[in-house]
Image (cartoon, helix red, strand yellow):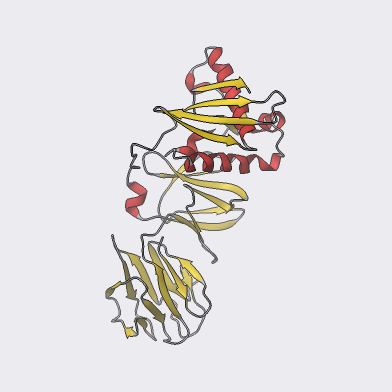
Length: 308
């Protein structure tokens, strides 16, 4: 993903698709020196390269030592040196000239949180109160444990623990459908086979699809998946319609699993990340949430359970 680094401090900044630089509070890269203008310059992703533009700054924007004409866009080469208002202090280098990645940006300043492993977790991956992930049709959704999932668009703002954030995503990445190669899997394709020890302390999962078997191994969060699988299988045996099978309220899940209640959201996040890393393109949907109900279920209906 695109990024720049301050040559003196080594501070690194991930680049948004439209990255504003200046002293303004809303700047993507906020710089405090008085020789930097409020709205100084902008870096913009232009389909296949980065473009730098001076926004009429008082002291100028410099690309490899040359002052730019205000209002004109200049292509930025990899490893180029950029300076804002001062050729000595505010010098930054392009350290990654690839396309920007989807990210959540704190509106009040601070480090952006990029898409990692197919997910954005806020305020952190250790405390995922809000999750953003990509769906199979290429769009992104934002999800909270107690509220409905909803589509989120480029530059849309939202709050996490009363802190304002902005979602940033290149337009073509946001709207394009996911490309599924022959070695990629989807939730609908996979069958999950659970192997459970007699004391139920060890739960192993194998994922089977298209003649392939992927060992998901024993993980602490596997018991949560096992509990959800049992609920869905029980409803299936009772003839309940597929759309209504397997839903469990999070309070019931907390009672039925050995996890600490505060870890439920963390386990859901880790399960989704595990399946995404295993090559399941829509792996975030291995756990589904029913909007506005506090209910969850396992996303696959192709399930088997046996004793180890």
